[in-house]
Image 1: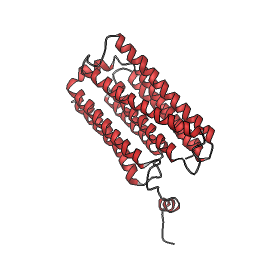
Image 2: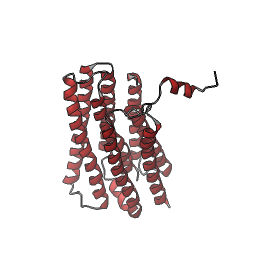
Image 3: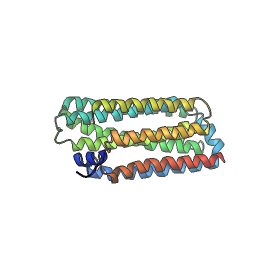
Image 4: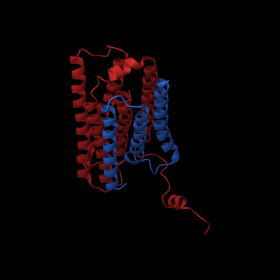
Length: 200
Length: 86
């Protein structure tokens, strides 16, 4: 037998899947969303260059505890969805639905934290037009929060179908589709949190 | 993907988040710490793409797009931050 390294052997045993999990259309949508967030992040980073003092001063007024809590919530939501997919692959329909419900609750928690965070800012007289930094802050975080809401709606449909036994180990593409979108919402926040709250 | 591995990934992401937050809480972060924050973000994004999105066993084309987006975004943010130091 010709020399074959471990990687090649693994590849022979488990050839890579040609497509990512879920419907291909959701991945096209995800790439479009990621392109939009890319443009926003890079615009923020390079605009900051011309307003270093303003951005640093305003970033100190942000509630990084709320930002951290929301990061923990989104990561936990992503984990719950990954557990839901793992459960349905073992034909465990009810636990899978419960994991999806838990993920939606983390989304609710995220929006509650955002509500109080925005509320504190509005109470202090800070809004979208206060200065350039806060225009970016509200635009970025509100745009992201809209994606959290959309992600929860998608998960809601997936959850309902999971409750009625609509998925199985053989057929769970719809759940994987919803899961992919929810993970994208988490992935974007992983960059947004340090960029806006931490990097001064 | 084993459930145990997913749990480990979740725990790692939680710890990395708290670490990032602590760096921000400690006052004005030094440039080396900012670089560390971006490295942590890269690792977190990598875990989410490979293990939560389950792209680890998907053909290279899709992984390259997703991981490429992550790395390019963070690299440009690092460049912008570095230019701000000059």
